[in-house]
Image (cartoon, rainbow, N blue to C red):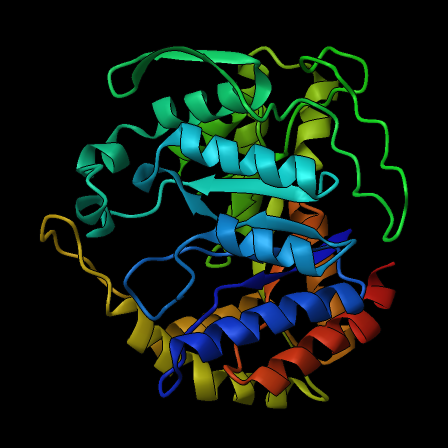
Length: 367
């Protein structure tokens, strides 16, 4: 199993934006030191639920501050940006990080973001498949043009080309850099398929879309094991109907990611107490700030009940209980990659301690 940290750069009541970002950056660096596999970065606009407006930009910072850990977006919201612009950023991070970057994309919500950035509600309601297809072509090709209902432009060269093989930077003080491949595509010697891509899936339609395109799923922390297992089963069926072989499906399914929550304390009661003290206020403060693009009605979960649900579903408790919860989810769903929200306490030092305990006390139990 591969276990990573999920960071929303959450602004808890009474905190400033810089404080929230500092906690997220510090936790990401601590995650590498603790031996975690990856960090995953959320992206939001205009709400304190998360104050990182560009997951790809924050990923660039963290890739520069780390040397081993994988860094992914969870997610970059595709309807609020041009797929080619996002593809260029992803290729840049892939090539300059030694291949440590993963691009997670999602449909987002019907928020005022669509109005502010001028993409319109259609980008959310019907434009996601076209945008995803263009993004994937950009990441896997040497030249790309578009003639769709939303994106139309003449064929242009893909620069930088994500399919070239990324190599690590030269050693500090070295007099000679590595020999880079001059390949011109995925089929060239030393080439790759570009940065890994995952798609956030919250509905049967998004599951089928990911399966048809052959990209893994990112499953939300609000879903329990039964729901995740059903989505994995639907993915397998849709991938088979799309003509993929059992071997291809197995390779893709090994890359599915399940988001969750982790709070490690000396007792289950203490872990729940920490989260129930902080998370309901954050949910109420952060989620209530969302504005819809067209005034449509939206309903918000009860913050306290939602926190209780997450504590019941995920790795909240002693190290042994947390390890057992993660292992049980893997057994029930087949998903073996995890992105665990570690900043639920809202406190910087508590978050760093949580990351350290996840690496030192939980990971060895999952080995």
